[in-house]
Image 1 (spheres, one colour):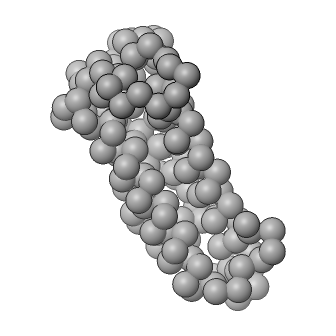
Image 2 (image 1 turned 60 degrees about the horizontal axis):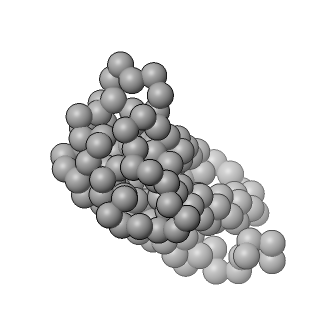
Length: 144
């Protein structure tokens, strides 16, 4: 167990990390970067700070994100089959990208699987940040 001050510092760092992950997920989603979404999911799944604080929803959402965008077995290019990239968010491109990965090792169940995984990750991140702020109401100034 960490002491109270070390926990507060860990919580502040985790909040910063989760905010960065949320921004990275949004950016990767807007460009259709399936490989990066899978890697970001993997990182969320294994985040030790989230594990320390018992934020299991982060692990679960990370696993779902990783699985939804995992390359299909036998495909060496993790971006093969993804929708063309656009300058900004295009929901139809994302649905097409998620659909293209339906037969992947991640077990996507339909065209909306990728979008659902992204939404679940965003919700889990928001809930985790709220829980951390509730538990540690006086964040460090550099947390923002």
